[in-house]
Image (cartoon, one colour):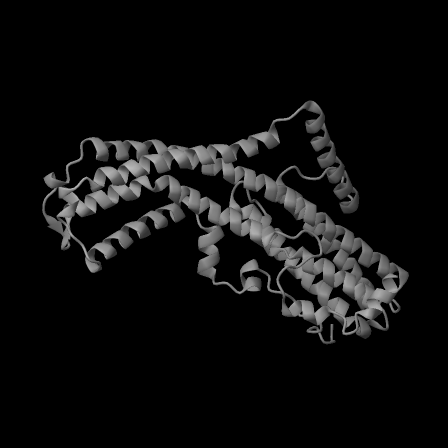
Length: 357
């Protein structure tokens, strides 16, 4: 197009760039392997304890002359048992969603089957893919195809220059759809490779912009172009419930992983705590290493190991809560103010209101 393609500024292609956060922060919160994040938490705690020992007011003799070790690890036994009970309670909510009478299960299947059939009709395909990544690719490719049809209609006429704003929007949508579709290719459900691309696909902004441009140029668009706009909006609207459905399944998947991780770490943590309470004698650990009491190094390391169930819980919850925060709204709602929103709003909103009436 030879017009001003900056009329509708296109948002950044990734969630990280849209929210203005650093690559390292997003990697740590959601992209990094959760076991690696768990190890980072434990290592950071250990290093922090050593820093406090070196620079804080310390009394090394207190470690061997009092019952502080038994009291410390005794409290850890209570904390670990309490955390396991809490995690098991949370897991019951996941089980409650999966266990139900025949009528509820049949209704769930009917709803999913009906939605798949609507997508198949919109995409003009016989059977939609069963893999989550391929199904989402189908939705994105359908929106891309309809955006291409709309672009052909507004750029092929003699008065195409007045529709440069629409052309810029459709070209950006097509390009972004290709990027996200490529990222979804071959992604396995359960890994974050499936969820991160759909977080990057800002369908809410696309729906809002499409509806705004359709109303803005309603008097100039042909009937076919208006119908193409409607088809594009319909295709984008399929993405919302599909994303929420797979997000729900992903959260359930992660809760199961949290439960397993906490349970795996609970028994070793309890065994370490029991040993420290029953038999460990700090007086038998003598000497220093790097200028730090060896007894303090050993006790701190064993204490950090008893924190492993909490570190697993924190690592997974960070990702789940971040995903939930980024996907709170469904449909054409954008919770974070952006420059792109301002650029496509009407200066006089009363024009839109009068048309909708």
